[in-house]
Amino acid sequence: MSETQKHSSDWNRVKQIFHETRELHGPERERLLAVLCGGDTTLRTQVDVLLAADRDGDAFLDARTVD
Image 1 (cartoon, rainbow, N blue to C red):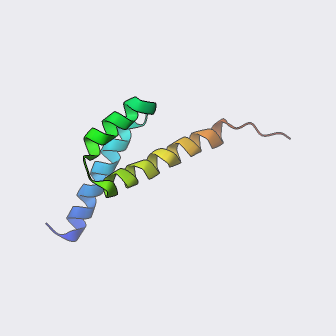
Image 2 (image 1 turned 120 degrees about the vertical axis):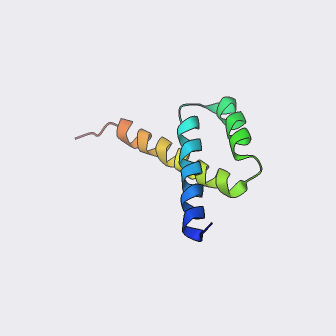
């Protein structure tokens, strides 16, 4: 497997886990992340970054502006 193929495969796994866990919260999300990521700390970090960006993006869009 080439480095490009490995990177693509890794990114697909990150996206898959993100989509499977983004609607969950608290202990339920943590349990599923632990199962899906196993002991792969790099994978977990990448998924956590996406989940945080998703949360922060929602907060930004939900914020009301005062004119």
